Amino acid sequence: MAISSLGVGSGLDLNQLVGQLVAAEREPKEQRLNQREERIDAQISAFGELTSSVDQVGSVLGDLSGFEPTQSASVADDSVANVTVTGDAENSDFSLEVNQLAQSQIVASAAGDFDSADDEVGAGQLQIQVGNGNAVTIDVEEGATLRDVRNAINDSEAGVTASIVNDGNGARLVLSANETGADNTISVTATEDPEGSGLGRLDSSNLTETRAAQDAEAVINGLTVTSSSNTLSDTIEGLEIELTGVSSGPTTVSVSEDRDELESLLQSFVENYNALIGQTNQLTAYDPEEDEAAVLTGDSTVRGIRSRLGNALIQPAEGAGGSNQTLAELGIISNRDGTLSFDSTRFSEAMERDGFENISDTVRNIAGQMRDVTDSFTGRDGLIQVRQDGLQSDLSRIERQREDLEARIERLEANWVRQFSRMDSMVAQMQATGDQLMAQLANTPLARNQSR
Image: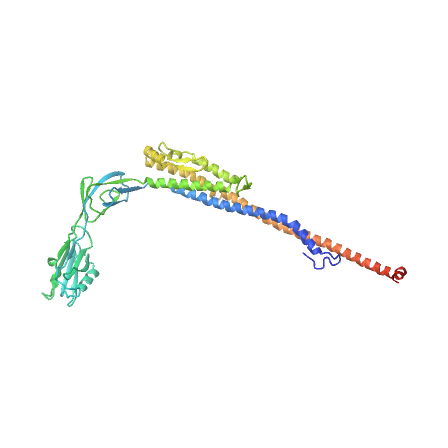
């Protein structure tokens, strides 16, 4: 609120003086407000990071509380078969021996019948049938080549795939059945029109079988099973067996609960929980040598979170069966620094004692109880949200204090300007009066005599 004429009468830089007084009044208070605001902003950011870590733990607990036991199947000799659990299969071991794989029939035209794919085949009709399927008739026009016949067969729905192979003895038309199995043999009936056109070379009577149609044959627990395909879907309830190779003897197929999935989830919980504990340690750290405190050192909310999590860890499962009722009994051990360790040996021993279903039930119960605790931290009315709301209120309060400070400074500045303006006027009047007196004294006889 500087006045351009302020100080004219006194000759002093009163504008600068007012500015210095304003700065002396504003800067310490403004600095304190800025420091408080920066600390609160840092605390809000820290609680945001803490929320993210708690949510990570809560997410794993959600997976554990909703865990449903699944089954997996393994084959000792995985070159023989792939086994997939498709339903509620019995947990057991069984022997599997693959004697032969299912295969489709392949037939070819006789060697030397055609020199190249451009040779004409003769006019007439080809009727193609695979197994008990519908017969498909293909009209062959005069002048049609072996290539034309191949294309016409592939464009039809005859149930075979046609190709041309040059084996050194000319071009041969090769037909492969699309379906495997002993019943899916290929039948080709060639009707020449006119007779003697040469189309008869593609009749089944003149075709050579290069691979026989064959069913798959496997022996399961001593029982022989045959199938037109290499996929056994209904042989054992809840399992799909895909045969992939012939075995030299029996191999073992094992069906069991997928314990690895549950163990992996428990290990993930331990890792995320330890990350959360590490973060709280970092946010509340204090360095006595440097006398430096972290952004949330001494914060009661963080202490409350750690305390409630620690209590939840030791609570037994509610209503679960089996003798193992706590996380410690399942291999999740609390360390002295507040972190957790996972003992896979203890987990396996608990599994052997109580069985997979009972252990799964215990895990679901404890995880559900702990999920309720983490939700109480990060929910709409949770511990962290309430603390963040309080910090936001503190920021709003600082903003109001900043506005009040600015208004007070403006009033002080205006008051100082008025005071210095009056002083400046008084000094100017005094100087004017002094100048008059000096002029009058200069005109006295004594002053004139002294000047001679």
